[in-house]
Length: 253
Ligand code: NDP
Image (cartoon, rainbow, N blue to C red):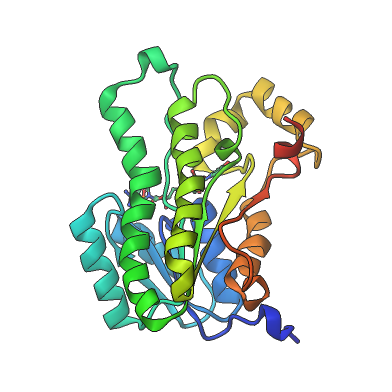
């Protein structure tokens, strides 16, 4: 039996960027916990395939680009009309671009900022307009180990994730008084498409295992427990915090 503090069954959750990787695993976890889940991404076919693999009959898809304000506004309005009021939003959509700063193109700078940071503002604001009116809601922003530390070659990514950490705290301050709780989840090195080049780089991969107290790369399923906690009543008095799920790496780097 689920302890009532962790019971989120019957809630409706939107996970951005959930056609694969971490977002899909988080959506699966929410579905397994009894939530109605809305998957999001930019490709309808990919989303439909992802949705077909999830348990339960309460899985929906919403195709919109999280970097485009008009698409986000239309997308959230459509989700609430079709599926129902959102109780939980997970701002997960993101990307990585690796290059030394001197070689980093201006267009890439804007692209990574839009995808990793502006998206959380746009989707968060659109969801929070409704959640604050209803007086409740839970928002979890997917931050990163790189919200705290940065390695050479990923400064723009770390800048977006560091800023997302502060946006999380600011959202908590602005929306908390209206009953909307905002926290962050900070994954360490997790095996997904985004990290494929690093996983395939044997030297780097071994460095990750060596520097992680848990001694291994993270799996997408490792993040589910933290999300379920932050989305549940058990975390009702937790606000503006980043829960790092990184095998301990942030503590020792
Ligand atoms: P993936 O590249 O595997 O997945 C990214 C997801 O985001 C896809 O579903 C993609 O869908 C979606 N997406 C990208 N851009 C947009 C957009 N403009 N609009 C809507 N959806 C979009 O990444 P991960 O699963 O590895 O990462 C997920 C999150 O976790 C990111 O925020 C990432 O920064 C963060 N993170 C990842 C870590 C890791 O080690 N993997 C570590 C720390 C943080 P589609 O292309 O179909 O639109």
